[in-house]
Every structure is written in structure tokens, then in C-alpha cells.
Length: 186
Image 1: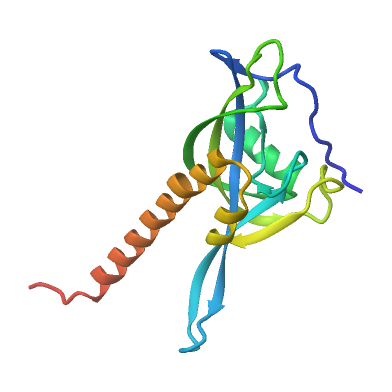
Image 2 (image 1 turned 90 degrees about the vertical axis):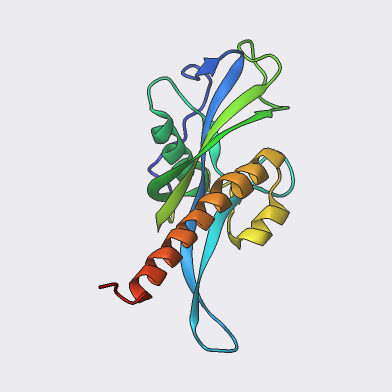
């Protein structure tokens, strides 16, 4: 049984300009895979997705950003509540707008939402978490995640936010490696 309890209700929910403010993350980890031909290891990124409670396919953890927390705290809380993972927020991916068909209320009658999304490097997978009775976790490589992602705005966060950031990291690592291998100038 989980000692953690998921927040519910809209009493503390943040709104701005007719939009419900949301915080979420793309949980990820690095794994080493053996390349078949050479026997060498390749570093691969996997992202963690969870089943949607309102339809088919998978989503990233996200939920309402509340008045008593920072946007970063809200993103971390959602990762624990929905996906049962803890980790470090390592990069802000951007803001993504979407329309919710199920979360319309007096402050947001059209269901407009604005999500702040982060990359979360997973350090711990919890055995028990608040929404484990309704959520299943799936670790996927990026092409699988793109294919199985339920919402277009989440695919955009994965492709334009997360993948761009990962490419920038790889370019920087390759630049550092090539700098180390360059002959020294006198």
C-alpha cells in the first residue's frame, strides 16, 4: 500500500488568462545496449510513459499546478503520483498548449490548458505509488514512445523539446571528445 496520497480537487488549481496551468515531465533514463556486430555498448535513452485513464495509448505524467507549489514541485509531484518515480528535473522543455475535453470548469470553460514540461532523470522507481491501481508504467525507446503517445502536444514536447535537448547534449559530448583527441598546438 502506498504511504503517498495523490492530490485531488481543483481548490488550489492555478489559472491564467482562461487557461488551466499544468506541470508535467518526460521521465527518462540511460541504458547500455550491446551492439550486435561489434559487441560494444551503445548508450540509449528510454522514456517512461504511463497508460491514460481516459483512452488508449500512453501519456507522460502531468497534472494541475497548484497555488501552494512551484511549477517544478508540481512536475515532480505528478511524476511520483502518476508514474511512481523520483528523480531530478534536469531541463525545462517548454510550454505546450492543448485543449482538454474532460477538464472544463468555471475558470476554464473551454478546457484550454498550458503545460510546463520538464525532463526528469529517474533515480528511483517506487514499488508503491498513489495511482498504481490505475496506471501501468512502460519504458520505451524514443521511436516507440512517438508511436504510442496519445496526444499530439506530448509528441511535440518529446520531439521538439526532449529530442532537441538530447541532440544538443550529444553534440556537446562529441565536441568535447574531439577536442580531447586533437593534437595540441604549440
